[in-house]
Amino acid sequence: MFIKFAQQSYDMKKRILLLSHIPPYPAVGGDHIRICQGVDFLTRHFEVDIAFITHRRDVVSQKSFNSAIVNEYSFYVPPVLRALQAVRTIVNGRAEVVNHYDNSAMRRFVAAHAHEYSFIFCASTVMAQYVMGLNGVKSYLDMTDSLAMNRETAAKMSHGIRQYLLKTEARRLKLYEAEALKYFHRTAYISEVDASFICGGTKCIVGNSVSFVPEADCCRHTPDSRNILFTGIMDYEPNVAASSFFAREVMPLIRRDIPDVTFTIAGKSPSAKVRELAALRGVCVTGFVESLTPLYRDCALVVAPMLSGSGVQNKILQALACGCCVVTTSKGAEGIEQLSDSLVICKADPAVMAACVVQLLHNPEKRRKIGELGRRQISEGFGLEHTDEQYRKFLDM
Image (cartoon, rainbow, N blue to C red; front, top):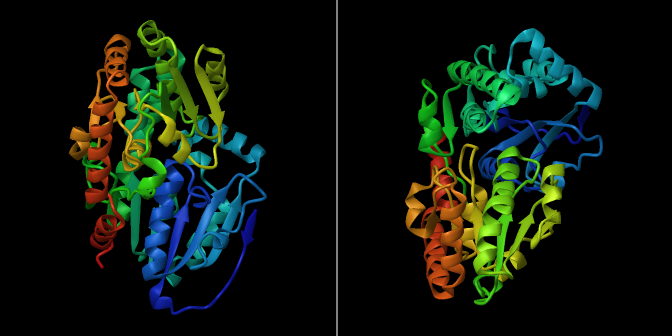
């Protein structure tokens, strides 16, 4: 189903089309934050139409969040069609996630109107399929992070049929990503780690900017707090694995030394596996919260014990921007090596991580100094001016 929300007429020389696999707004979660960042930049410099896939009939008009958007086109995919797309993966041999966002109505729309725009901006890897095969259309791809690398790291942690399926998906995605690069003038990645995973194409790095919370609202941390915070979209498998690992394997070891320690898991759409963690002693699963700022302010530290995934962890950037002390793994720190002085990086081992957290909980002054350094480094390297310059280079402006 295709829904058009608004139509206006603008100079074609300045018109561009942005393709997204989700409605960009509201900016909740890593994918949304990244795409909104792109939309915000593009609407400051071009007349922007957006076309996106949605799995909800009641999608909110994107112009209510960003009035600079000219036209928006929504392509609804009903549940029955999503189920059929999963079956197609068996038949056509393409990656499941690529089939998941394949929509015939959007294909017809892009093919019919692509030449009306100065260029097409694909805001995610899976949207590259709508440009592949078009002739004479200038296009840019914000691949952000490699989906193939994401599946590969997840496969290493899995067993049996799940491992087989993840390896198969990773192999198919790697072929798809390499092929996609041939159709784009340039491709943007969020980090050198992701860019180096895929061969070919003209690559640029475009990082994420971070919204700063006023110092008075977030930097008055409670010195005697015993609460540990984890944030994220809680049906995203790397977040499910990380929070489960910490709650089930690390927290019991911390509690031996600090009995009143608590662990808060905050973020929308907690999976059944995450909801089960609330039954554990000292663990709270909040679900969606309107603002994370009070949680950042009241926690002792933030953990991002990532075991899998790809790209850059926005949860870490935002926590640092709020002056929090952050404990993570080498996987969590990938792509933000320049912030290593502001992070406490631990081996993904329960005993090692527990000992590290216990030491920090007993040392509020050390936590404060680490948090202050992180906030300062974020302000110096992840501000809007920095990412704007990266977008300009990426788009030949």
